Length: 79
Image 1 (cartoon, rainbow, N blue to C red):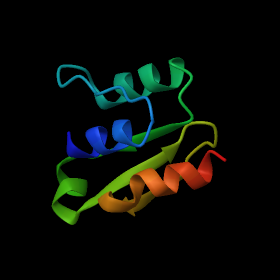
Image 2 (spheres, rainbow, N blue to C red):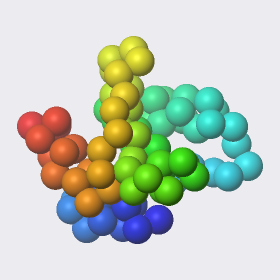
Image 3 (cartoon, helix red, strand yellow):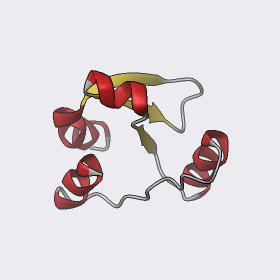
């Protein structure tokens, strides 16, 4: 939730995942919304202090980014 607030404060539009939906369904929703990236923070990512940044336009492209660097990284990617 903190990462979402930080992204919104940096001017990004965010959608939060719904806990009752499968991960796959949530990614389909993000892709259908026209989003370029999905920021994924599951239990494993939260424990490691990272978010998985998934490029929804590039099949399979995903990498871990430290939570404090997400907004800056998205800013660079979306220029």
